[in-house]
Image 1 (cartoon, one colour):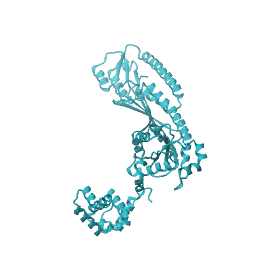
Image 2 (tube, rainbow, N blue to C red):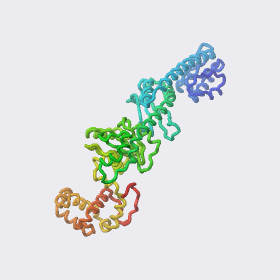
Image 3 (cartoon, rainbow, N blue to C red):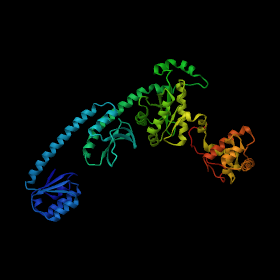
Image 4 (tube, rainbow, N blue to C red):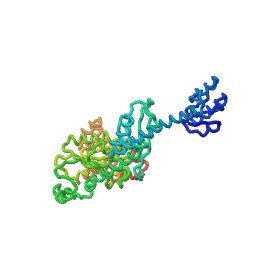
Length: 476
C-alpha cells in the first residue's frame, strides 16, 4: 500500500502494490491516466483515486492495462490507512499460520513424514523432493490437469548436491501461489534435516553390507569353508547362514569410487524397491542384500526394480545387476560377485539397464571382450575376408553354420538358403582365409564373427588397421 502525491513516486513501487493517489493527483484525468501507465509498468495491482467523474478514455485505459481503478468518496489518505490496517491484520494471520506450520513440521523426523505434513497443509497437493528431474520421494497427489509448479532449492548440509522441494498446484486458482512458496520455504530446513538424519541412519545400517566386499572368496573354496573361516565376523555383522538373499549392485560408467553426494540420492530411490534393506556405498558402486526366501519373490524384486528404478537409473547414468536366486542358502561373497558381474554385463546395453545373473550365465564372459580389439584382430588375421565386397554375406553364413553346431542343413534352413548355396559360401570363406577346418580355432572364429555381426561397419575394407577405442572398462 503506497500513498503518492507525485508521479515519480509510482516508479519506485513494488509489484502487486495498491497505489493510492492524493486528492490533488486524482483531480485531473490526464494525471490519472499517467498514474495508470506508471502503475502498469511497475505491475501494481490497483489504483485508488478520489471520487470524481472520469472520462470513458481513462476507464478504458484501466481495462486495457488490466489494472483495477477504484474511486473513493472518502479522503484517499484515510482509505490508505484503513486498507493498510486490514492488509496488516491479514498478514499477521498468515504469519501466525506459518509459525504454527513450522512448529508442526519440525516435529517430523523422517522425510516421508515431512512431505506428508506439507501436503496435508496444502489440502493434499503433490509434494516431492527431486534431483536433476528425478523424483526421489513424494507425498500427496499430483494434479492430472494443468498445474503450477513451484520449486524451492534445497541443499543437504554443506554438500554439493542440489535438489528441489517441489509442489504441483492445480491451475484452478484455488491456492495462493505465494503462500504455497512460503510454506515450502518454511519447510525446507525440516526437509534437509530429515534427509540428513535418514541418510545417517541408512549409512549405519549399511555397515554389515559394505563389510562383505572385503571378505575374500578363494576360487574353488566351498561355501561351508567360507562360512567357517568368517563365521565369527558374519555373526557379529548379523548375517545368518540359513537365510537366503539376492544381491544388488549399482554402478556407473567407470568402476571408480562413487560420488558421495549421489549415495543419498540412490538411498531415497532404493526405498521404493526394498525399504528394509540398506544400500551401502562400496568401492566401485553401491551394494544391497535383500532377504528373499523363494524364487517367486526374487522375480517380484527384479520386477519392482525395473518398474520403479530403471527410469531414474537411466537419468542418472547408472545400471543395476542382480545375483541369481539360489535354492540353498548362498555364500554371501559369491552372490555379491554375481551381482557385480551382472552390473558390469549390463553396462553395454546402456544406462537404465537392469540385468539378473540368472538370465546371463556363461554369456557374461562375452561382456569382458573389447569389441574394437576383436575387430582389430579380424583386420590383422583375416585381411582378405575383411576386404571382400561380400564380407557381410560370408560372415552371416559362417556364423549360422557355427551356431548350428556345424550342420549345413540347419544353418541353410535358418538363413532361407538352399543347402548347396550355403556350402558354396562356406567354401568361399575358406578361400578368404577363414580356418573352418581347424577345430582348435573355431571358438576364436565364432567369437570374431559374433563381434563383427554385432557391430557392422566396425572398420572399412580400405582401412586394414582400425583405430582402437577404449569402449569398455573391463577388457581381459
